[in-house]
Length: 266
View 1 (tube, rainbow, N blue to C red):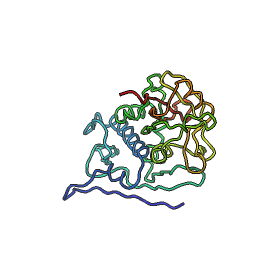
View 2: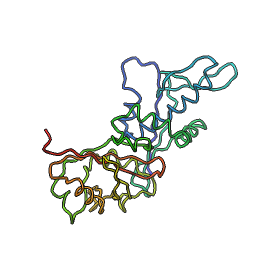
View 3: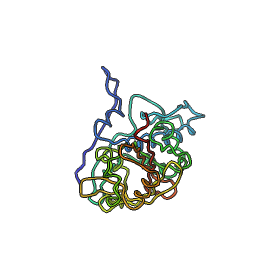
View 4: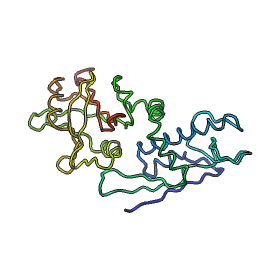
């Protein structure tokens, strides 16, 4: 597995530089990976604040810049700082068993603890998504509390081929899928073989579909569920469909929400 190590060290700049988050984005990190890093930092700082309340300082909010300091009791705490970064070593690679890139962080025991917090603090993670990525959340209120993670939605203007009964698939924009949707897949979710997904309409009704790479180059939502969806809602050529992808907090499965707008609406 080929990999590249990304190292950042922050010192007092002599001239204006891009932010660490922008630098990570430029280095090829996806939005999902950046969101995960921010969630980890947010949750770690929240724990540190509880320890720091009765010591030297109390850091409000969250920041991607963290530095270990030592109190008179020789205990290390993480406080807000713009001089150093706590997340310093990243290895990005790929796995033959999965279509998604894998990000692994190597640092010390505290970094391992950050990863454990992702699964043990789902409420904090959802809070981060709601507060800082509101446009990524599906607009269906009844399922928002079950969103474990989500990504930037994509839009699609329906063509005649999307509404053909024998074709029975919704063709998604390749660029959007590869940039936003694929990085959310986990090991064992094979886009080539197809990933079963529960798809919701804006009334909370669900349809069984499959998220799949079709004909080796197209990405689609397919199966009878799509035919049932477009026939139930009487979709027509020119209608615009917005596709939200998220992972369910209970089933941990990939889900979608589809919202449509009539093409004749001014």
